[in-house]
Amino acid sequence: MFDTHTVPVVTIDGPSGSGKGTICQLLAKELGWHLLDSGALYRIVGLAAERKGLGFDDAAALADLAANLNVEFRPSEPGEPSAVLLDHEDISNEVRSESSGTLASKVAIHQPVREALKSLQRSFAKAPGLVADGRDMGTIVFPAAAVKIYLIASAEERAQRRYQQLISKGESVNLAALLEDIQQRDQRDMNRSIAPLKPADDAIVIDSSGTAIADVFSQVLSQVQARIQS
Ligand code: DC
Image (tube, protein in one colour):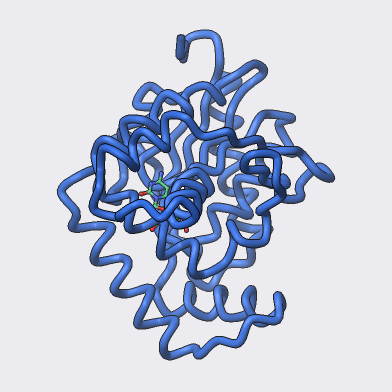
């Protein structure tokens, strides 16, 4: 059972490109805690659904798939993303592609899928602690988390960061199209009726626009240290 009294949880939520993935990896490494990349779980459900030929409007079948995922996160070097295995097959590259992000956003709108993933996400809360990366970590999955951070950045800056990331992976991308996609995804994520993207009432909001990742990380770390050690 999920127990916030014994296992400290830090949640970092925010839109894609806000830098939360990098900050979560750095923080988990610094604290020596486990890491939950909840977006990867939605991406895996999307990919698995596509492979099985399931309809993206079939909430019951998608939820059944989500509840029975045979998934493993295999840690690589500290601070590096884990390898992702689905049915023992390494799908790490597919999981991080733009197209799996689109599949993820299609499965993420179904409440039964979110419900099925909730217990899987909570099972990541193990000693000595968990850093949870997502959209609804502080609001829904870990409402009693010890520290909740909500990271934001302007859409222009997030598009620029994503552009650099994809270019460095050899994907061909168009900056204007990325910006439009990010703005549309923000609207969808913030305005959906189920688990909309928003800060928890007790979240600390940090704007990373125009700030080096190292500076954002030190702001986050000092917030966490002030709350966890007090
Ligand atoms: O963070 P990401 O880009 O890997 O997320 C992929 C999609 O999954 C994104 O469209 C929103 C959705 N998602 C969600 O609804 N809830 C989460 N906790 C994490 C991701």
